[in-house]
Image (tube, rainbow, N blue to C red; front, side):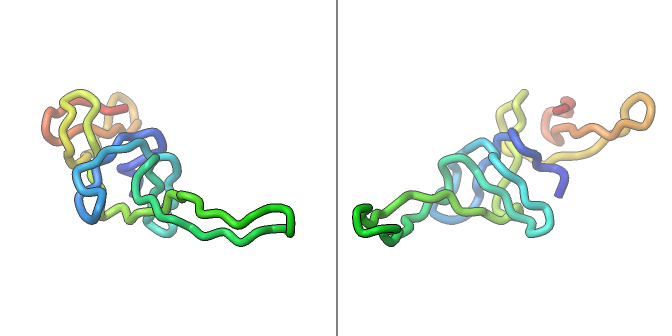
Length: 104
């Protein structure tokens, strides 16, 4: 689950937003879900909170499963898998499996 992090660019591979890209706003590792900016939007009907305030329909970004997105490499600009290498010392860094460039 730690292959996709907050701030990464991802591409959705299934559903109504297939092939669209967006930036990860939030990661929920315990639920294996992420929230992507501007994607997986739904309309939510909101009741009025008081007599003076009217009800409204708002657009809301819903979480999407990690299995339905692919990481987009910033170097080669392709949707790809992410691997891990141990760099100098004991630091574990991510790398693109297509272009073999370090991500972090």
